[in-house]
Image (cartoon, rainbow, N blue to C red):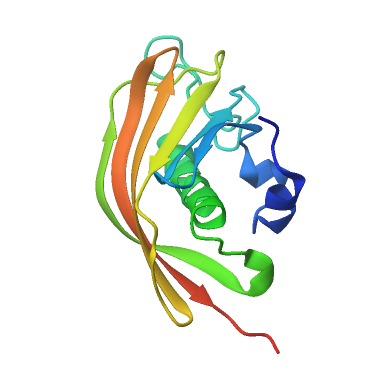
Length: 157
C-alpha cells in the first residue's frame, strides 16, 4: 500500500527524518502497523560510521532504531488514534521499558518495522500510548522493545 501523502505531510519530521517509504500493513482495529524502511549507507548516523569490516561493520545504528520507534509510535497515533500534528498533537517518549538488539541490521536489505498497541487512553488534551515494537530484516528479528509515550495537544488558537 502506498504511503499516504497526508501522513507524510503531517509528520513532525521531513522525509530525511521520516525514513520509512511504505506501509505494508495497517490494521487500526488491532492496533498493528507494519512499515518498510529502505536501508543504505546514507542513512543518518550510518553515513558517519567509521567502518571496519570486522570490528565495526556498517549497520543501522542503535540510535536510529530508537528514532524509528518514535516514527512508528507516530504512525500508530495517526492511524489508530486519529491524532494529527496539524491539530496540535505532538508525542514525547516517556519510558523505554525494554530495548533488545538481537543482531546488527546491515544496510543492503530493507527492514520491516512493526508496532502493536491498543488504542491510546485519551483524557482531554492528553493521550497516553503504550507500544510493542519488532523490527525484522530478511525474516530475522534485529530489534524488539516496549515503550510508552505521552501525546499532548497544544492549542494554538
